[in-house]
Image 1 (cartoon, rainbow, N blue to C red):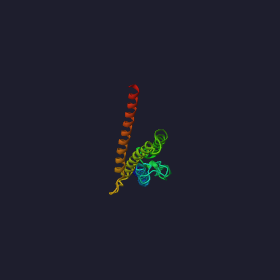
Image 2: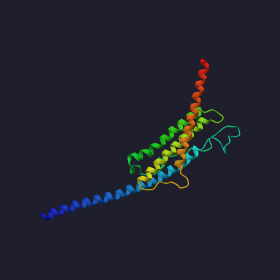
Image 3: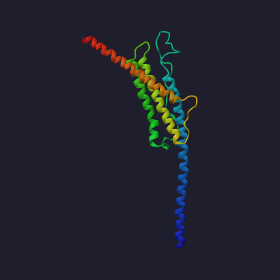
Length: 204
């Protein structure tokens, strides 16, 4: 009887140790996959943020001057963020963080649609000011959000924030966003005043 009990205990202990061993190896694998994913995607986001800084500063002028025909034109290509091409294990991330990263391209698409609409329906030549302001503002906002996602990814795996001491893109984008919002507000106020004056002159 005692031998049977000891034998059973040995079997149970063996199964338990096997489960613990497998769990330990899987845990280490998941940790490494999460680290690889976070570093790779955060670096992709860093490049996107740098591109956003460039777009946020693009007012359509080259060294402060329009083109040879007097028109403003896009000087900086829009950056791309394509996380789906990364060969990583997305399931190694918490659901909320995975959703932030994978849904971000949809926000880029929405922003691009708004920019296209501004150029097509609101902006007028030769400076296309409304279009460029919309493009600058939307990419300032996208850059701020992308920076936040990269920070969350690094925090998840215990890495410090990737910020250079001499230049902080997030600070630059935040200032640019505030400036552009003020510019748009002033433009809208000017337009409202113009419409009010026009209505007043017709009713006088």
